[in-house]
Length: 283
Image (cartoon, one colour):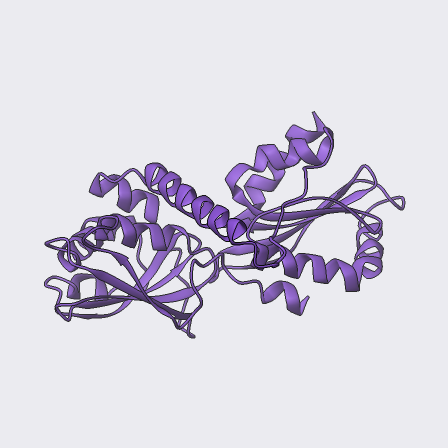
């Protein structure tokens, strides 16, 4: 299980690296800031800064802002700094802090670090609500980012440096598992399907899929035994959440059906999403 707990978020850059995400000739700094939060599924500390010297440190997980941990050069930031667990009541204050940070289309930089230990738990404020409040369509921003990533991938492929590109396998044939995956939608951030030793499909960032693959390579037999103990007969369909983390905002899902096993990463609270998808797949 250790490898599953070590799953990393599909970060767009390595933790600890400083990166420019908004400013002249780039996406608007405010939209870029919201996009970074929206792309952060597992717990991270994000530090945003401008050339003028203003900075803002946030604990982020599961596409939510958990808390503001530090601020410098931002008027009104104290309204959020004193809140141990942000929620919807803090939406206007936090939106104001974000807007002040990037005032004047300032060039924005971001650095990510592992989420440190903190007292208590925070459900957090969803970035989607902040985006709505600020009049920013995250769907458009996500589409633009996807096009940029696709363009970069095509450019790398055209270089022909001999590196083997990551290619997602075709999805499994129509049946229970594809129906389940379709119903889960964006809630299923990454997944891998295997029947015996044969892979039938995969999807999601490679840094999230690879640990699932490694886990199945090493623990498939033990996992099958565990699933059999949950059913009346060996091989029966079963679905379970192997583990979840309120801080990092993800769960590890395991589903067996039709002679295959699906292992996946679920963003946010898994219980409701998984039950609805399971019922839909069962018809």
